Image (cartoon, rainbow, N blue to C red):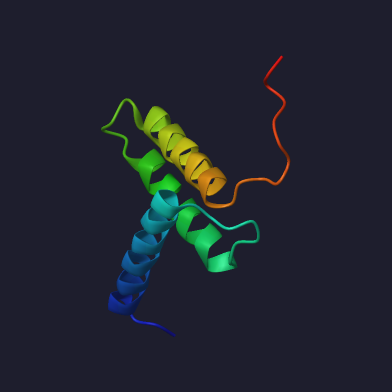
Length: 83
C-alpha cells in the first residue's frame, strides 16, 4: 500500500511524463505508462470546472499530441497531392 504522499508523487511524475509525451509525440507502439500519462494530462485539463474553455484546451492537447507523434514517426507512404 502506498501512502498519500507517494501517490501524489507518482501522479506528479505521470503528469510530467504526459506533458513530455504531448510535446515530443508518442511512438507507433507506445508504452502503457505513456498512454496513461497522456490520459491523466487530458483528464486534468477537463476537470478544471472554473475554465469555460476546458474542452477546447483538452482538444488542443490531443491535437498537439497527434501532430508531434506524426512528425516523430512519419509514415512511409508518400502523399499524392500533386496533379
